[in-house]
Amino acid sequence: MSELLLARSAGTLSVGAPKGHDDLYAQFDLLAASGSAAGPLLRPAPHEIWFSSTDAAAPSLHAHTAGLATLVRLMALSDGSNLTLSGWFESLRARIATTFGPAGTCVLLAPSIAAARDLARAVAYAIHGERAHEVSAGGAESHDIGETWDIPLRLADGRAREAREINHEALHAARRLGYPLLLHTLDHSRTGLAGLTRAGADAIASERSALTLIDATVMRTTPDCLRWDLEAGRMVLISGSTFLGGHASSAALLVPACLIARLNHAVPAELLAQTSAHDMEPELRDLFCAPDAPRLNIGLGLRWSAALAELDRYINTPEPLRSAILDLFISKVLGQIARYDWIDRIEHGKGGVAPLILGGVSMAQAQAIRDALAAPSDQPGDAVYHIGEPILLGADLIALPLSASAPMVNEVASRIARGVSFERAFGPVQRDIEALFAKLERVWGQGAPSLH
Image 1 (cartoon, rainbow, N blue to C red):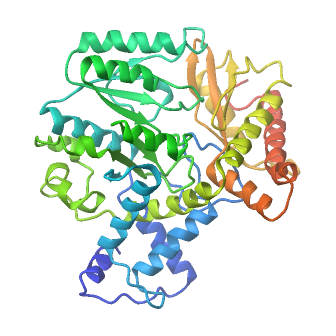
Image 2 (cartoon, helix red, strand yellow):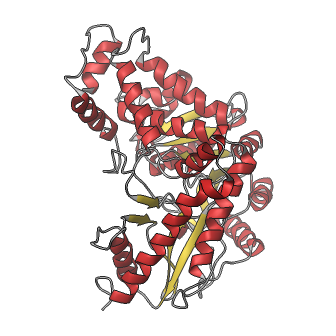
Image 3 (cartoon, rainbow, N blue to C red):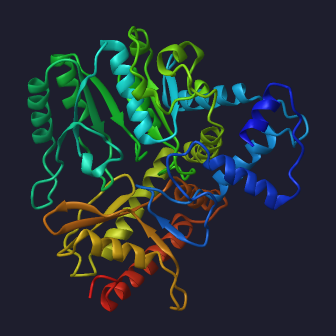
């Protein structure tokens, strides 16, 4: 199918409509999964409850519908469609740049967070002419951090460390490693903590001429904050596959104009293994595309088309309302956690993330709890609940993140826009939270697999 679309773009083939609705869905599934590093969640699952947006979730109905509409336009199935493949990718990059960046921001699309992180390494190499030493904080609570000098966010007993301690340790590591340096600044971890702070990164950058990458892949930061990061000369890493409710495997690296002006050196091919030509501006392709790189990754384009549709709804919701919904989610989750004495501790998350912290269980047992929550049951009114992947916090202390998502915020906001009160608009989410903990209590009491 990707070959057909490429031929259509070149004007050598006219593609007819699929035979029916199911055929369109099947073609979209095939294309959306192409060029994907991971992710079997191709279609919405609206009857399942998704509190797993720190990791991955099924695409939202709105995002999936937008992806299907994009495919229809690409195949010229709608009247008056003049969408070309090159114009499509240009518009995707422009929408991301306009939403998050100041003028001159360059966007490099990537089929995974790991691939986008490699592109940040490629930018550092193109500036310095050699691989940069890397310092990060919170690798255990982030996505695909790779090989770095990593500083823990927590003490041995699982308690969060002070930001000044993390900053001081990062500065010490930077002095030991030498020049050049790439700093990974974790904006939000998968349990709601911050890593190396921006002020800490700026202090290191000033002393050691380091480049800074803001890891915003959990997508809990306002676009205005990320715009400020880019204005300050920091790179920014985002994802459409977690909080935004898009299909798995969509990421992007945003590079400020001041760094683009410093690109002078050829980049090793191993950092560019997953790039395609239309993932970036034409003037960057000689540096960041391997000679045999494919022209484009149609699946990546469809995944970003879906994610950006949900992002548009989120951005159009006033920021105070977005924050209020996310804060209420945390409050309701923490209220449920406080009811159970077998939950080890309460940790106040942020950005719509509240970790469920369990003591005296293994990673295998925590995964068994997660699996049991996601399994159908015969209990009347029960549902399938998805929560985040287990994270080891300390000895015998494991967190299962519960997180709100942009689609959830958008649905609450849409009910409010129709005249429903804030409390009633949030009511379905609150009922889902209460039902999740009721099932968790049964799972714990009955003994999930491997807990006997």
